[in-house]
Length: 486
Image (cartoon, rainbow, N blue to C red; front, side, top):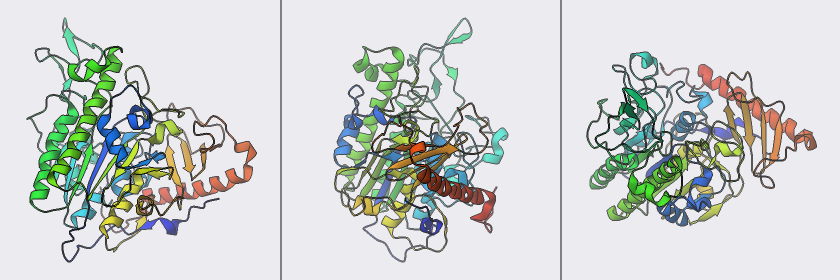
């Protein structure tokens, strides 16, 4: 039985500036979708949704068959990507909850000390972006205590929203008015002359100013139109770069233009828009990868692709978790197992692996690739995947642990335990007792074998309980007693 040992999870996060330039430092692009299901892409077997660019990327990547979002909802997973830590350590336990604390040390802050240019593009959702005007879910005076924009966490260039926007014409809610009352027509895109309901969400730049230009059309293109100049500028200036590209696709409201709906004309309106908006996003992934080739930097650029959690999986957002049980908000596989690719032509041999990896592994992996010099330490939950990318590791040295909505889970190379975790204050169905699944024999989690393996359950519960206690100690401020926070 694999045991979780805290001393194995210490990663030195604060890095010293390098003494000289290192031409071999890799560029990094972290691409993430919002509510994209494991089964929503061609490289995982979907035969309906056209994702040719992602499928082509998969042939040049290490494809993770067991890649996990660190949480079954978006904000917590996003925090894990740029800290290497589980979000229960710093208070982003769900969507629209908490914020990225000043005392946390982010991937962008680390790479800036290595002379990287850093950019965030798309959905942030780890704090509010303005204290002056009402914005999105929490922005403005009502959410001033959670003001934590990306430009205060190491990002030089920003084109960021606090939370969701439509996947087409992102500043226009797809609603039409009849006799003074709004009437939703599926999620179909509005024509230019139709009056739309005000969205109430803005894109903000690194100076904290709202962006008003070039905000029409497919939202992934609107985002990528900002990514491309950033990449070009970095290459011109001979600077390595970190580009965090977090598409809103296919989070509700899912909207696609006629061009992208047309291939799916045989389906109902919601499916036309859902499938079409994914194809529109796929096109922009191809655009980014092609630009890297044009700039001559694709060989030494790490491009990661994943989703922040499983799909909504309902009529208005008909995503697929593939063969897995559960959906978004669930710690069953369908809520946390997501598409996962890592492409790095200079270092990574294309193929696939059953090695279990998670979004918390991004930061340890990238810092190891950069070769940072440690000066500080705190418990983290991710590991460096460099041995996996190099084909040297096949088993994970420590399990992946999860907490959400009154449930905790632990997954190792084979087995997965779910157990009740404190008071459940949500509408989620409470686990009555621990459940154990053999993910290799039963990836759909249909056969609870807890009663057959009481000793294994006991050992895994002890490991998971110790990890939960560690997260609580972090949340209580134990990781940074001498650093200010708000």
